[in-house]
Amino acid sequence: MDHLTRNVPALLQVLRIAECGSINKAAEILNVSQSALTRSLGRLEAELGVSLFERSGKGVKLTAFGESILSHARSIEAQLRSARRDIIALKAEKTHPLRIGATPLITHQFLLPALGSLQDRFSNLRIRLVEGTRPNLLGKLRLGRLDCVLSTFPFDQQEDGLLQKSAFDLDLRVVVRATHPLASRPYHDLRDLSRWRWILPRADSALYRRVENDFRRAGATFPGSVIETSSPETARALVLTTDLLAILPIRSIESEIKSNSVMVLSGGWSFEQRTVGMFVRPGPVSAPCRYLLDFLRRSERRSFKSATASP
Image 1 (cartoon, rainbow, N blue to C red):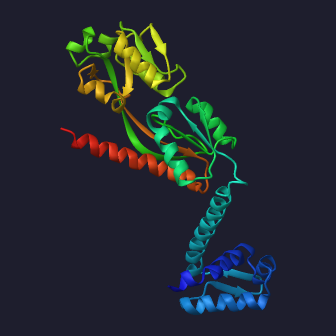
Image 2 (cartoon, rainbow, N blue to C red):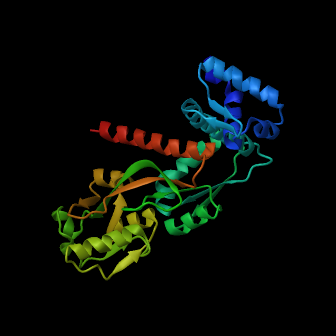
Image 3 (cartoon, one colour):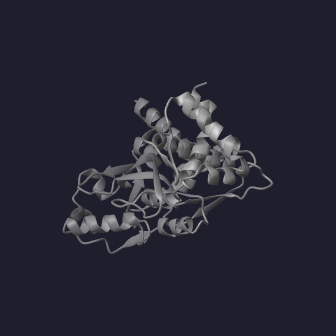
């Protein structure tokens, strides 16, 4: 065991002394005597072989060595606080539900298996799942009404005041059923597709706006006949039974592609790549949220390996 590992309490005392600028004031806050705190600091400095503070009549000031130690002390304190919160959260009789926000696409395509694994890992954890649009969910997250939000990330901007932790990239494709007149020619300009009816997510979604912008940039008329739905299952069923076009995750229609039930159309549009991940408020992330994010990352890697291994 090295010096710093053995002296974690002394490192946290350094943090208090630095905050107070005085050994006497730090001793009062730590509820120890000034002499005991001085001896503890002296032992740490002796083991490290450096002085952490410059002493003067006005108090103490960190040396360059002390500044270096201070950053580690802050990190240790943050981890201890996070561990304490995790322990409290895992006590079933005192815990609040883990409040997860998710968009319908993420819920139905990726989240359901993760929730089962999450409850297996944290047996006493209660989970509250809230579905909605990303703006609505992120508003609740900012107000502290949700613990995390799983969604696609914005195309070209960050969300102010929130942290974005990526899980995996999501491939979206424009698809039609195999008997659709467009299916005979896989590559199309958006002008070719403007006269057809589409299935799109809600008009207030980032994907809808991106599709609309792509049509505008291509000099094409945005489809006037659109069915709006956030459910990938509904969109998939409509594609298989009508001549509507839809934008679907490629992994959700893998079996239909292999059986030649649907055709993927290609073209010069910009909305096919999305990042899926977790939004959280700044600060330590709870153990269940970390596990959930790691599960999504692992499961997507397994799906990728399975797909690339298929003939």
